[in-house]
View 1: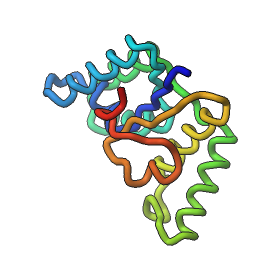
View 2: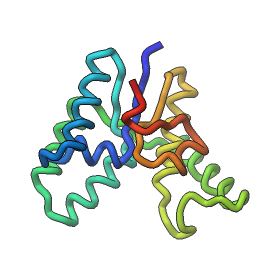
View 3: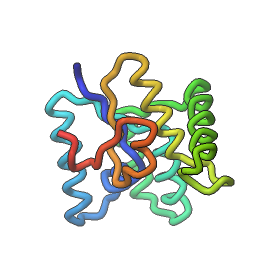
Length: 150
């Protein structure tokens, strides 16, 4: 079964960043290697939102253009009603267990991303979230540091 990789905002920000620093370049090379190997790499809509809002705030037009181009190239997984229902359940469960993933007033993109990953997994895909922060995501969905996904 082919691997589907959902990009969390950390790796997505590095890939779409036009800057030529070694970490960004390594992340771009990693994604290209995955795609050449037959993996499907997708931008979750919540990660696009998280990266885009900061690019807009900072008026980083080149970054927005790169993010748009990347979305056209690899695709964007939309947020659906069932995703949001699952995310709300994850959010409530985390708080009931005393282990919230964000402040109570926060939108909590991590549970939305985890719910997107689980929705795709339920449809039969082999899914993993590529992230730079495993702590919250791995409680609800398969997640790995991007460098560890091959």
